[in-house]
Length: 450
Image 1 (cartoon, rainbow, N blue to C red):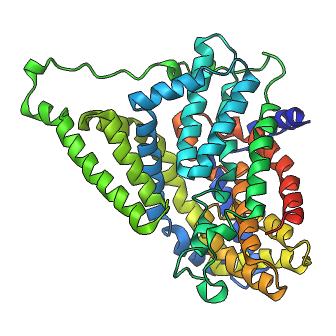
Image 2: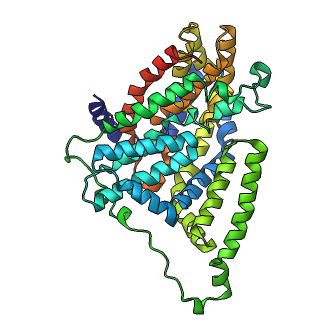
Image 3: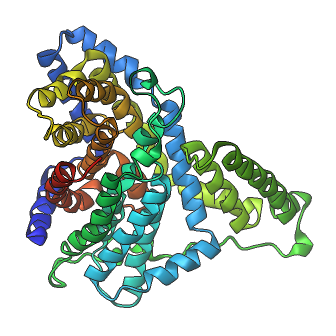
């Protein structure tokens, strides 16, 4: 069944899934129309809401660019690249390659979504490349999809925005719900159960997407022959010809001084704040460790320059998604959508309907933290009115936010930049997994305790 669904949605995506920027524009049109129909905002009001939100993700967009370039530079450091090469040589078939990529990305994404994002992209590309070198036909678009599918569990992991936010003193809902420690959310029976189910089921579902025969397989060398090329190191000058500038650029001492200062701060950060993995510290760790592994300033500069090529989609599209968030938030459309599901909920079904509402809202507000900011107050208020578990409500929103990323190409942009795949190449497989997974989450939310 999953294979047939994958084939169907892949064909659908090839016909109808536009470039991610066009997808963002079409979502903008849809949000604008929905705001006019279901809220009190007029045509000009919606434009004002759009512009008010348009620039609200600039800092986040820069953080995402840094996730991409520092993560890429770390993953392409000689030592890491050798490790990924060894891992990429394990699969002996298309199905095995898909299973491996999804499994590794689940683990990496559970530790930190930024790590999972880059590991998924680099590993997918390398598994396909190694398969081509070993004459094993591996479907490159499916590898890209596998690298993205594995990330669909991130919001229940150690970098989950909503559960970490409500555990932080001074968060915007503290007066309403107080501080909720992660032992009640990330380490709850519900979340542990969800993770166990997902790490078993998700790779198996993805494995089922693999083509039954070699017919229709597009290998990486067929997709883009230049992806098979090894990164060429710049020919070094003989040391006897080095100028002062060359010596500075190739100075391991300078690199080690920066690394030492960075490591001192990293140790201080975790000593002072505990296991606090926010975007800034993750990017800083990626940067410092990447510089250490590359060894010299100029080697790291070249890796960063190469990684920057994948940032174009982020730079262009994030403002448009911020505009969509602005229309959703300032018009009150989020409250309207969430209210529909609250109205049909009971004490038994509330968490499941909150999850479904979050799935829908995430398509318009794909930022995890942004979605909690706009949906969280409504979900919490309803849960309190019905005297239901707030931690379970937090996780229901988190699960919905993460799961429809498999339809929303917002988070795939760094992966697409590194693999050079198009969104229509991977989204059909992701959408098939998304539809199969929704009832699994609903059942788990109905059966497992908070």
